[in-house]
Structure formats: structure tokens, C-alpha cells
Length: 272
Image (tube, rainbow, N blue to C red; front, top):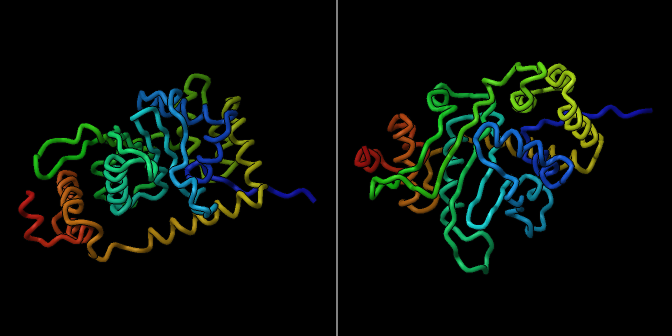
């Protein structure tokens, strides 16, 4: 009996890593990223930031990162976007900019561009800045960090777009929002490149080993989304203060910033 492929979303890190590592499919990401942001990923090399963990499930779940000399681009696939999703992304962008890439290597300065692909917005507060690019600010010098850039692609505005013969790249972005092969079929229409990607997704949907990694990511995301920040301090106060300053710039309330960073109200008010 023929096995029916399960639906595999393009909004999973597991899916992106599988396609980006394959020369036959990485063009899909290169094309829509260049269309939406102007960034050409062709000179970049896709890298595994957790290549040597020995934990295959974790490695498959690692983010999709591209490196070109001292320039690094990270793709964040945010299926469900909460306030804590944005906070996590800011922390990650700061960490990538401030640390060497591999342990044992000599430190070198690098420029980080984080591209947030935001799909389902779960917070009215997030809606206020969704779709906007923003820079991070150093809370001490009050100057913007020129080596860190965050770009947001609002996928909600591409939801429902179908191929009409002239909108190939918009169709690619619409494909990211699909929740079934039937929906993806309607989006793609007679777009040959879109059909190539969908057939690869169906192939992955029949692969039990890939399915195990894919399931591990889905479970992990649900765990993150259900575990709300309880106000505990994470990392050094200086890092928390930098994040707090940026959250205030994004119009979060003092109360929300307190919950997100673990800082006291008096410390946060000093940043305002």
C-alpha cells in the first residue's frame, strides 16, 4: 500500500536546513531572501553552528546560518510570534555578534544580519513593530550597534497570494504560510519552481528519519511557547539591560520588560 506523505512546513528549521544543504534546492531561499531584503546569499556558505554536538535532533533544529568572511546572516523561522519570540531573537543576534564562531579559533569581529520570518502574530504588541526593520542600541553610549541589523519579513501580507504568471517571488513567500499540500497546490498553480519544492517536501514527508527530527522541533517549539518567562535573570545584568533598552524602544511596557529581562523597575526606569 502506498504511503501518504505527511505535510512538511517550510517554516521549520529542520526543513530549511535539509533544503539549504542541498544544491538542488537552496536557490529557493536565496531567491526569496534577495527579493524581500536585497541580500544576495549566493556568496555565502550555509554553516552548522552546532555541527559537533553529537545530538542529531538538536543539530537539525539549529538555526539556518550563512557566513561570508566576517558577515553572518541568520534566518529565524518564527511560526508563532509572541513577545518572548522577539526577545529570544534579540538575545541571539547580540550573542552572534559578540562571540567567535567556533571554539578554539581566534576572535574576529563580524557583522550580523538577522532575518525574522514572522508568520502568525500572537500578540497585539508584536503587531506594532512586525514588518519593520530595527537596529539595536547600546544602553550606555545610547548609540546604535552598527554591526547588528535585524530585518523582519511579515509573512501575513503574503498569505493567500497565488501564482499569476508574474509574481514568482511573492508566491515563494506565500508558500511559507501554507498549512497543507492542498493549500500549497493552490498557491503554486503552474509555477514550475514551486512544484519542485513541494515535491521535495513530499519526499521528506515520507522519510521516517527526517520525520523524527521534524517532530522533535515541533515539540520543542510548543514547549517554548508554553513556558512563559517568569522574571528570572538570565545572563549578566549588562546583557539584560541592553535588551531592556531595545524593548522599551519597541514600546513595551515597563512591566513587560521587567518580566522579560528580570530587571527591577527602578533599573528599567533609568533607561527611559
